Length: 180
Image 1 (tube, rainbow, N blue to C red):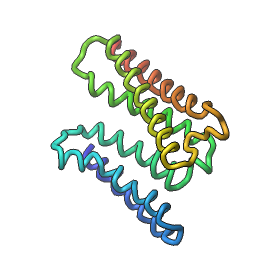
Image 2: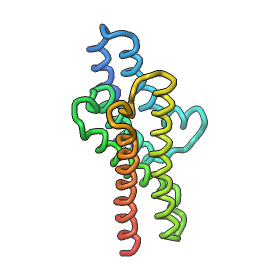
Image 3: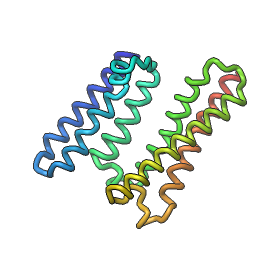
Image 4: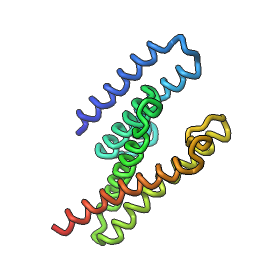
């Protein structure tokens, strides 16, 4: 798993550097936006090194997949603008990923119903926290990441609903695995 994570990190960083080199003439804001992936992709390793946080290879794997999809493909490669359904795919996947992270947190508990409730609640909280972060950024820096001008609250609500669906699907699989 460590080797897979290192490969994912390298792929993400190489893709980002290639993109950055192609956009050097687009201004500092674009360069900073594209460069921020370096920090977000390496964050688990920074946390492990600086704060002695022992993140599992599974959590790092989840993080790197999500960063590649959401940050590199979505923001840097602009899939959010190029493919209308990409945002919903990423939010559904984020529901599955946060559900997996929650399962790792409660892995020592044998109470299946508590675990499922925790998994779904944790995932729903993460979706809420992300949408709140986007909302605050929109207020502080302008922009419309939540597409409020275009959709009202529909985009935000759909993002949270598909994340919930992802967590529910994961929980259903978790339940079936535990029962078999």
